[in-house]
Image (cartoon, rainbow, N blue to C red; front, side):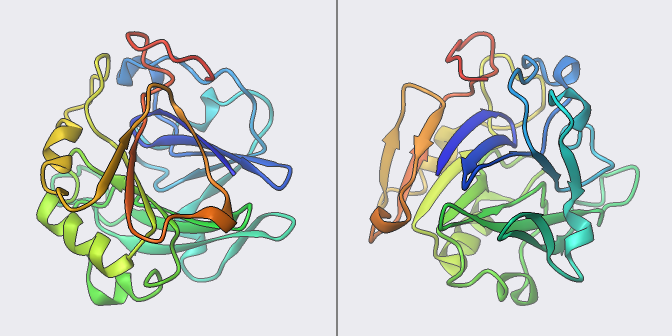
Length: 231
């Protein structure tokens, strides 16, 4: 499976003949460049948050899936690929519906991925239970601020027990959203192996996942001050 971090909470994942984009930001508001490559599917954790739901910027004619629709029952994204979701709360500061958000899990290329959406509160056991032992790669909210506090994120990582964590939703040079630096998250993870990449892409082989937790820090492909390409 090939994973590319565009920036903020937006990734591109490719395997099994399917291309999937997660939680696309609104370019003008985010300060990030638009996505240039078409995708088959867009999954968004909330339809109400412009920082996570601007599917219109993804080229082509992607199918758009609101993860909240997968809370009650899995939704098929493509042949043999389904998304499951866990309802979550973003926080009472939200002016619309503070609960209109979801974490979501899917398997692509034999790799189980969980995207944390925009959760802003500690995760309860009922939310963690569907994820325990079922996640290889956690796309983790590492910028604190209005999202999950870092001590609560540590607890979630311990409970979910992924093999790989990819930080997202943290500060990059051009990002306009108010999020913290990834270094504050990494400072708490001194016992983990941290791999900092020069680019935005990570390849994952289901047969060669690490036995102990690794944190892979990517560069945002759509941050104009980083210019990693691959968008």
